[in-house]
Picture 1 (spheres, rainbow, N blue to C red):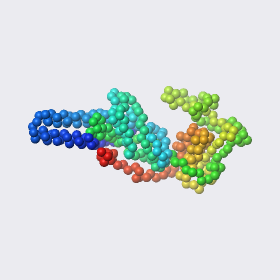
Picture 2 (cartoon, one colour):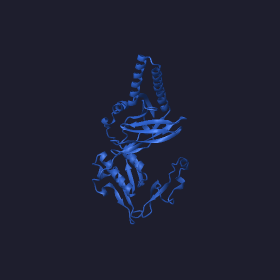
Picture 3 (tube, rainbow, N blue to C red):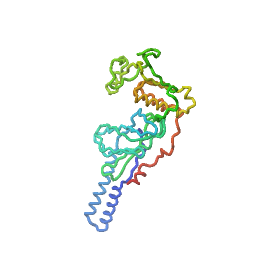
Picture 4 (tube, rainbow, N blue to C red):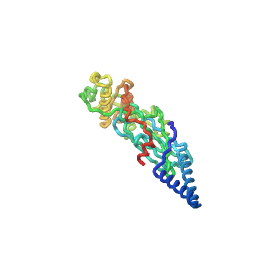
Length: 321
């Protein structure tokens, strides 16, 4: 994640501190009191040292977006950032801001990483630009706030899936299918390979397809065979379905999302056919791939310019202090 130039802004307490220092300086010059000169010198030294401490507090600190995040249009979610402190001393009083949202971290240990969640509500699907993302600190006395703007890598920006819409056609027209004992192929036919669900048995795991190298990172996934079951609910969503051709792109995407949400909550098997690819699963399994296909379906909607105005962080903060 790249950085822009640093910005500096006096806080309310910093303005009071500067005003007090100037008042004592004038008093020392007018009276010639050595005690006042000594006090002014001490205050000026504290101001200089606090500036260097604030610069050192942000030195080598790294913040990066977690890749592969998925949001839903017009629904609030948490944008996750990984904050790294590779230095041999701790990080204090760090503030992260995403538009109007902010999060303050009191302490991050030496050579440690932490995850930070910032609330974000995207307005449209696709990959809209993020609000201004900034990192700053007022350490140690909160007299001077020093910050910088962070520019996320394009590949790490989250995708936004369409919001769910109500169905306007009969379920059969959307491709809902009810499997029964008399369905073609019979009970137990192989459908596809999916990821193992939590609490599911190990009998259907395809052990030769397990990537054991991922187990050391805690990302081990167990592929299992999905087989047809008696009276199992199945949903097939086809982008080229004749019943949906009169719908706009956004209407089809919203209805597909609504059907997938229903399959998720009910634990039904589903299959999504899109121009960019095919996704299949049951319940939550495989849903990330399906939502990504919906989010990337062209043409992408226009980005509202008003929601992403790049106002200065510290100019807005000045009004709050």
